[in-house]
Every structure is written in C-alpha cells, then in structure tokens.
Length: 392
Image 1 (tube, rainbow, N blue to C red):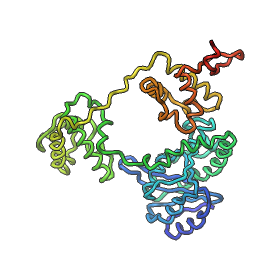
Image 2: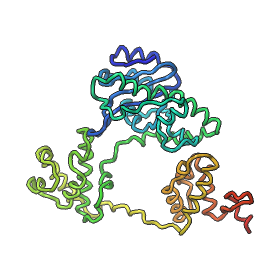
Image 3: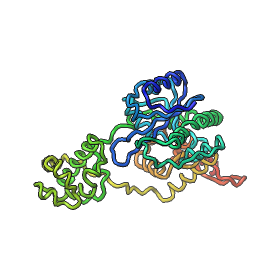
C-alpha cells in the first residue's frame, strides 16, 4: 500500500497502520545549500506492506508520527543515517534509538565500507532503482509522481535489505560488532551543535596571528556561529572565512575601517557592523594568558616500519574476516595507536581497544607492539601471526 500524506487526517491513518510494528524503514529528503539547518522536504517510512511519503510542508504538525518513531521498542532502519537522524532527532527533541544502519551493516559483512543503497538493493533484490531525482529541490511544490516514487523506493527496498543483512550478521555472529558501531548513532553527543568558541580551529592560516589577534578571531568566529544558528544561514554567508581572519588581523575600530576590509559584505556592515566592533573590542580585552594555545600539528613520527607492519597485520586479519581493512582500522587510527603505545604504554582507552575491535584486531596489534607476537611466513606460504618465543 503506497500513501502520500499531505493532510493531518491522512497522517493519523498512517500512524494507526504502522503503530505496533517492531521495525520501521525511514528516510528523509532535504535541502541544505543555503541554510544552517536542513530544510525538510519529505519523510518516507515503510514496513510490512506499507510505504508512505509524508509531506512536512503540507502537514507541519508531525507529532503523531514522531511519537511512533520515538518508541524504544521500534527498530529504526536507515541507510547512511547521520543526516536523517540529525533532522529527526531535532524534530523529536531527543535521540532516536535503537538504530540500524544498512550501510554500516553492509560494511561488517564484507560488502564494502561506503556501498551505495542502489548497489545494496541490486545485490539483495536484483532490482535497479532509479537515481535520476537525486538533485531535486525537495522543498519545491508540487512534487511530481516520479519524484514521490523515487523517494518511496528509498524505504520500500530498505525492508528486504534489512532482513537480509540481519540474517548475514547473525550467521557471521557479528551482532556485537553492530552494537559497537551503532552506539555512536544512538549517542546524543553525536548530534550536539558545534561549540561556537571552538570554530576558529577550522580556519586556515591562523598560526601566524599574534595572541591578541587570535583572541579577536575566537570571539568573531563564536559570534558568527551563533548568528548563523539564530538566522538559519550558512556562517560563510555572514562573513567569509578569509575575511573573518583579515578582520581579526586588522582589528578595525570603526565602521569605515570595518567596511574597507576586503571581501566584507556591505549588507552585513549595516546589519551588524556595530555589534561586530563590540565583539572585536571584547576580544582585545582578553588577557593574553587566557588565550588558548593552538593545538600542535600532528608531526609525531613513529619508529620506522612500525605502522607498515601493523597495517600488514590489519590487512591479513581483514582477509580472514572477509571485510575491508579500513573497517578494522584505517591508517590514521593505526598511527594514533602506535603513538599512544609509544608515549604511554597504555592503550586500554584507545578506539582500537574498544568494543568488538579489541578482540578482532586491538589485542593482536598490542601483542606485536609489546614484542610478544610476530608475523611469519608459514609452511603453507601464508603470512600468519605466531608467538615470538616459537621463533627462538
């Protein structure tokens, strides 16, 4: 049963139909080209025999539907869920759980770390889904029949994909792997808005700024981030990054000097010029000892060959488990693991020593670093990991 929901009455009917199911496939269509927050265009939902597209522009009061998906007894199934969850969590006022992400699950059964939904559907159902509407303005009305069908397909086929992946995960005994990966998606910290006072760290070419100019930049970027959140616009549409850095370097003291900074938007000068000057003065008043030091660039050099050795170990283990190596540990994580070991000797709190990764790869890497295990070529000409004492 396909349904296009554009009235409150139709939404109530849909919610009654899907209430009580233990799994709902979900997706959203949105636009985020000029706004700070996603502009929601559609919400799609599917379960056994039901597929619907909810029009949040025609039906802005979504509470009956949100109450259904907030149920902790309902598994919410997505593909590449991060942005969908940002939208729905904000609407719900809480973090949805439990979550099942088919892209993550596919990576853990060996289908690839960034496999597209279209490829998964073809793999599971041998069907080709059309992706011709991916650049649709989902907030423009009316939507065509083809656009609505395209959107519904994104959840219609999620149901069999979920069932197949669940079957494979159980067969491979990797349920704990899933729990570890989904924990991040179910953590409220994942969806917190950026901290305004830390946004200066994202800017380029700031290491040559004097301390008092850095203090000004910290204040300016924090102000810009708060303004962007309040106005629901992109921060760069208020003041561009390079212009913001130049303002901090020049520290203009009046509107004329501020407007003369290259790249400064004239409309912003009339709108908030006086406020920006006030922010600049506040930055200049910060005592130098209170200005945070810029984090050091990671120039740490591990011992020659160590990372390469561990990378080889990861690749061998990945082949055994039939997954991509970067699912277990990517090069950055390996570098950080080696650095953690060499600097502290303790890796208990490292990412590769958490959840399922500890047993799959973390303990193995630690044993090599600790001189207890080694890679060797066996009689079958396969590279294997063996206790070091066997080589003596």
